[in-house]
Every structure is written in C-alpha cells, then in structure tokens.
Length: 192
Ligand SMILES: C[S@@+](CC[C@H](N)C(=O)[O-])C[C@H]1O[C@@H](n2cnc3c(N)ncnc32)[C@H](O)[C@@H]1O
Image 1 (cartoon, rainbow, N blue to C red):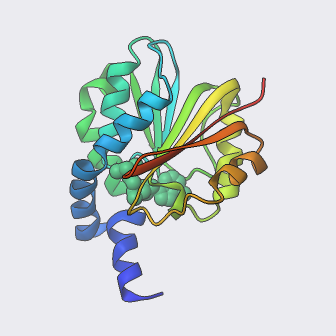
Image 2 (image 1 turned 120 degrees about the vertical axis):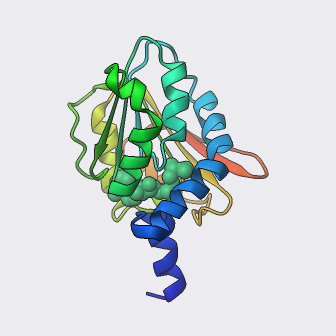
C-alpha cells in the first residue's frame, strides 16, 4: 500500500491516532451539508427508526436526532476514535436513550432483523472491506418496504458507476441515482 493511501486510511478510512482525531475534525466541517442533503432525500419521519453506518464524527447523527423525535437513532462505526467523537457530540441524546452508538462493522450488525425503517451511510461504503456483505447485512436489519441511502461527496473516491448494481445484487429494489455537482446519492428500498 502506498504511503499516501495509508495516511488517508488512518485519517478518514478507519480513523485512529492523531491523524484520526484530525480526520474527524475535518469531516465534521466538510461532510455535514452532504449529510443534510441525504437525510432530506431519505424523507426521514419523526416516528422512524434510523440506522447510520460509518457515522464518523457524528454530525449527521445530531441531525437525525432532531428529525426523529419519536423513533430511535442507532449508529455503528468501526473506529473507536469516531465512536468517542460522535458520543461526545451526542451526549445528551444518548443519556436520554434516544440514540445508541456502537463500535463494530457493517458486515456483522448487532441489531435484530427488520428493526429499522431507514438506513444511510455517507462516504463510508468505499472503505468497507466487503461492500456486498455490508449491503446484505443492512438489508437484513431494514423492515420490508424500508429505505436505504448511500451518499458520497466528489472527493470520496467512490465512482458513481456500479453502486445501483451493487444494491440490486444485495436484494434492494427501485435503486436510483440522484446527483448534484458536489454530491451523489443512491436510494433504494427493501422489497415488501
Ligand atoms: C470517510 S469516513 C466518513 C464519516 C462520516 N460518515 C462523514 O461523512 O463525515 C468513513 C467512516 O466509515 C467508517 N467505517 C469504515 N469501515 C467500516 C465498517 N466496515 N463498518 C462500519 N463503519 C466503517 C470509518 O470508521 C469512518 O468513520
């Protein structure tokens, strides 16, 4: 692996150490608008149970807490550093039992089948070790008729091409791409 890629992964891919802390601060500033756009596309309702995979510094979790007043918000991230940053950012909501943020990997979600109405991931799928397994596992925990959104900024390294096909292969339906100059998002649903 090149030195540049190794530094990139430490800062943003699975943040750890000093670079990971810095990466969290940078992502909190630069990805919030894309996250807000994706939550709008996903049409989050106050009563939804929502899962965010790869929540990073937890800025989108903060937004979800505001949108989901009755339901619950859960998140999973593979980086201890990010779990700590996101827990600090969402301390009050966690204390009130409104939010649960777990350390773990998308390939083995610690949640029951059909427990979420909606799931999202921003700038995350491109660094999962096994994207196909991760998408199948998200499908497992979404309710029939529930929806998924995968959002990416243009500097994520994720090509637009092929994501719709990945979702269809994982068993999602009605997959479609929405894009702006800066961001793109693929929306899909779990069949009823
Ligand atoms: C580029 S960061 C994006 C963070 C945040 N979503 C944002 O947009 O600012 C990718 C995130 O995905 C997490 N991640 C990487 N591999 C993962 C996996 N297998 N399961 C869950 N999260 C993972 C990383 O720890 C990191 O927080």
